Amino acid sequence: MNKVFCSVDERFEDPLFEVFEGGDFVLSSYHDIESSRTEMQIYFPEDGKIEEAARRLRDALAIVGVDAEVGSARIPDEDWKFSYRRHFRTEEIGRRLVAVPTWEFDRTNDYGGRIPILLDPGLAFGTGKHETTRACLEYIDELAPAAGRRPQSTSFLDMGCGSGILSIAAAKLGYGPVAGFDIDEEAVAASRENAAVNGVEVDFRVFALGRGAVTLDESIEAAKGLYPDLALNSGNSAPHDAVPDPADVVVANILGPLLIAFADEIAHYARKTLVVSGILNELYPEVLAAFAARGFTEVSRRTLGEWTTGLLEIA
Image (cartoon, rainbow, N blue to C red; front, side, top):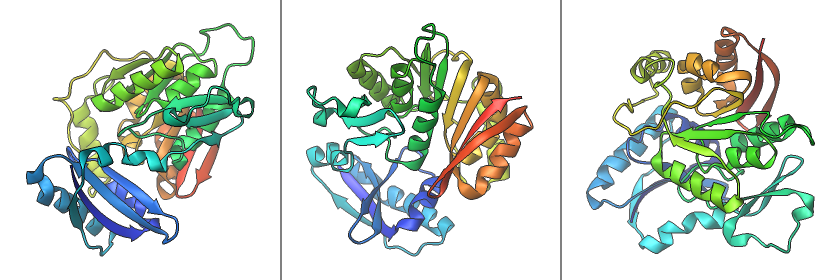
């Protein structure tokens, strides 16, 4: 396994994720608490792609305006495969949830009466540590159907499911039916495995926004017009499952520019309540305006670090 990397000040971590255009490459990060530095990393198996990966990382650094040296290294496959585990520990979230790595789960531990969400995210996004995931989980907890309410009464849809953490939490909190989708087949596979470990039923699908209310190419062009520095690719060749059904509660934890570009389609899926996340603070007013124009009003917002998550309802 190969790694291309650079070291940056921690304040540049989120902007680099926002602008990175990786194609087949996935950007990850590791934060060193002692040095307050963050290592941005790209892992990939092909030896012949080192320069391409380095170029894409340099492009993102240039957009953000960071002067950092980009290096590369070869690491043993097994070390890479499980390296993410050292960054993921049991963590309480909101009033009733606790995210627990599958390799740390203890059946004799009642976790203080909290509901455990067992996860092995692998390469998929979502452990509960990132501000956007945490804010979404807090809202899902607060919006959960009241105890004793008729089962299967509040449907839930997770857009960009990643590891499946949001969908699994929803299922354990009493929502139903619960569905989620992601454009990444590996993420959907990880979500399905995590749902099985948690003993919940979630309809996970491989699907891309742009296949429903509007075409993907039109949405990509709209996003490029709004944000010329954000490089986006059409995913029309990607495999996909059937179009998901609209739901009572929809959580869209994707990048702010994509929320704006896909606002018509996202609004189509939300019957009543919509949680929008993955939004840098300075972009939130534009996201809110996009959905206000489609009949949604803001109920509340949460700002954690550089990210804002909004709770919206159809007027």
